[in-house]
Length: 425
Image (spheres, rainbow, N blue to C red):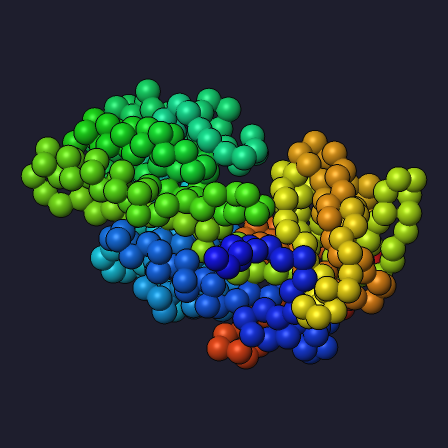
């Protein structure tokens, strides 16, 4: 029997069939590289759902939005900027189901005006959103995002349910929200829930049952159920894969019971973000120094938390491989190292646990000038980048069918100060 395939090998020489050495030679470092085939394969796993709606906050590059649109995926937007991005990628505001839905807990003024101008449907996460929309669009339709009073997630910062979360309309206030909608003649046509991530099916069944219960409380005007997102991505070899078919079966069972009650069809949506793009993305970074600090060995690279903030924000784990072919990798030994970036911050460490606890990770012995691949970085990577320490944004590259396409050029130092000015003395 063949040994099981290693999900995260210590060495990786290519991404999507393109040698990493060629990618670095063409685009430099740090650079994000996305494998289109991996994204398309993830989308295909959701074929049982009526609608797949991409939560673009995970990765909103126009090339990614165009890719998912061509695969039949619709899009969620949380800002005026994301609506604009969706339109540039070929989405229109009109259609059934809606190609773009605006989901938030508030309307900032720009978002409200764009929603009204484009006719984008809204998923309301607060009573004030209902009121503000109803004043401008009396007689329209809305959906409601409900906070069921419980949540789930690998970090308190990613848990989107319960009384410590700002998200959604509190479950006990649902009837008040419906009455507020009625005041403006608004029809509540859907229920949305997203409370965090996990593969615990007892937990997932609880989410589905709660959503159906809220739909019954609203009444037969409900025609869509959104299961939200939060489907987990494996970042470690031992992390389990979520069974999408089993997840669908839970929601489908409850959806059918609701259809029987209402006497009409209820569409079932899923709203993945990270799940579609995380495993497809890699951050390529060059080792610029190695050094011993007491018992720790450090590999210091040219990418920092200005490029990938998840470790410093959540203590998130990312697999790290060395860009070597198998023959050369076989000559190297693993060693425990701390991988850090160039920023003038002690927290600029890629190998840390939540709370800033620095940890060592086994990485192949490496030399200055070699390339590390920080893997599973295709979601909440570039989109959370900053110019901290006046560092330019990294380049982004999409690999498709063995060809590499630059989909965002590297920012220059001139770009850093574009728009700034010094007042005259």
